Length: 402
Image (cartoon, rainbow, N blue to C red; front, top):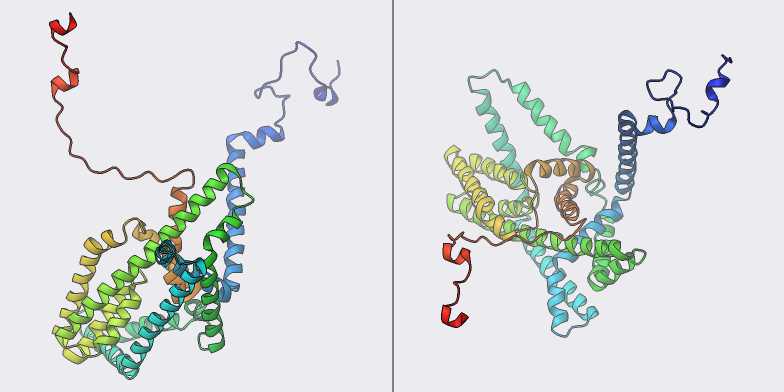
């Protein structure tokens, strides 16, 4: 009887019992090791690591190409925002080229005129605004150090310096604001954004159809569904945010002007710009207004300004945003906060502005990936069913039956 290991490697004769896992002579195969619970966990972990590495490489490449990526993203968002105007012009007999030129020139004239008027109106007040804000921080620091808490002036200075270092660091300025002093990069990015915007406005559907040519069947339908969802979400977000920002800036600007706070126009402009950064933009603008009021009008006026900012934010969040934003941005505040943090680190202020609409589009695409999103059912009051109606129509009379 052979006792060497070669006998164990011989195939079993016909009719012999197959060794089980409990049989000491059986050995685990590569297939069994990969298909058991631990093997499945190891394979899934490896897939996750590969996806994370790929995502890291993509993000790194996008950051390195920020001079192209940021104008491209801005052009996509603006093209989605003006898409209803383009459709309206085409519906009224304008060709694609004519509708694009009319919309683009009108947008440049309107926005350029507004920016010019704002610059001429407040160009002599920015230095004063910075000085008032700095004095407000110093006054607030003196007040905090006078409280009966163990907070030293050194700790406050360290916290303030940390914030200043972050705002002036390469992390905050990398991406969008790195090299903002170099006028060449700014002008190049602006011109590139306008050129890309022109082609997106003129040939946006054709460009997307060209990208979907390799796909057939349900994959092609999925691509069309994703394109429509992205345009609807981006357009609704930027239009809704602009309306909310305008209402916030007007309401807060009028409120602080009534209180008698100086520099109301620059503060209102900062509120308008800050409203494009959810959660923190309007809050930071309100803090700045309160600091200016603290220096110019005293603590009572500063508290009134804080109350105005809180009231406007509450009205916006509870009444205006649900109506204006509608389905454009339904994200949990934690998701928005994480997106803002990542966008700020990667792209500075512009990254913070672009991160939330990108996250909203990503979530909207996930919802329609496997099919169209279900339409919300209208709210209907439940009516008590009539027992007779539930039993069915009454039986016909005997004469009719006869």
